[in-house]
Length: 160
Image (tube, rainbow, N blue to C red; front, side, top):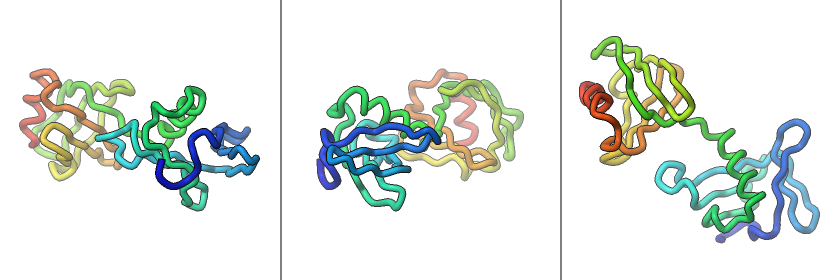
C-alpha cells in the first residue's frame, strides 16, 4: 500500500440511503466514499483507491486479493456501481456498414441494441482491446478481439 490508510484499518458498508461508508479502526467515519480503479481494463484487481466525497484518498489497495473477503466484496460492489462498461461478447448484426448504424450485440450484461454514430466512436486501446461508444455515450468493452467468434470479427473488420 502506498498512501492512504492501511487495508486492515477500515471497514466498508452502506448506509440506509445506499451511500458507501468507510469506518476507520479509530471510529472515524467517511460517508459517500467512492472506490476507483487506477487501470480498470488492464489491471482491474490492482491499484484501487477509496476516496472521500471530497476526492481525498483514504485507502490505497495495491492488490484486491490482499483485502479480507467481506471488504473485498463491498469494494467490488462499489466499483460495479461506478463502472458500467458492459463487455461485448458477440456482435449479432448491424443494419448498415455505413454510419450511423444499429448494432445488435450480446454483452456481459445481456443482449442489447445501440447506435454507432461513426467509426471514430470505436477506440483501440491496444492491439486486441477496443472500446465502442454508442450514441448515448455508453461505452462497451471488447477485451480480446481474437477470442471473439469469426462472424463478430468479420463484422467488426468492416468498421475498423
